[in-house]
Amino acid sequence: MTESVQCFGRKKTAVAVSYCKRGRGLIKINGCPIELVEPEILRYKVFEPVLLLGRQRFAGVDMRVRVKGGGHVSQIYAIRQAIAKSLVAYYQKYVDEQQKKDIKDILLTYDRTLLVADPRRMEPKKFGGRGARSRFQKSYR
Image (cartoon, rainbow, N blue to C red; front, side, top):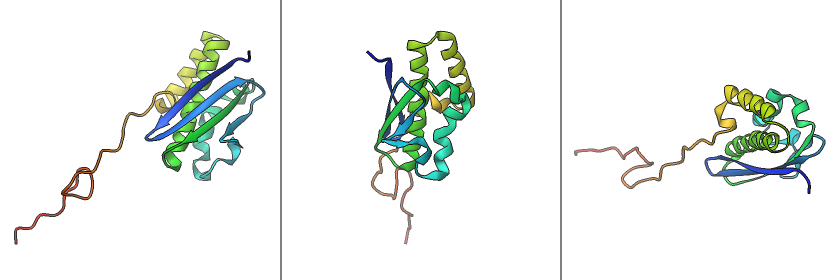
């Protein structure tokens, strides 16, 4: 049985599921390497966990990430959360608690959304206006 963990990341309606197993440092997103993530402006956002923790921490694991739902930006945030969470889970399960704690501290001090999902959701639109809160202009004549 191979050493593997599965984790998910969420942002709005996008869900990314990451499958992390022992390997040699491959990270693929929907079958494509992490270097080719679109949109390229947000490519650094996906790289953040790797850049923060250094390549050597990812050298012993392979990650495959599936993502669906949401828009481009939400998917990027879901992917980076899935990558960070699955590495922490892998280190907790198969490496040791101290290294896992170090990784977790680095990620949390940089950006909490790397490990903790953002609970904000879109509020439904109501009648009498264009959106959830805005109302149509009122006239008395």
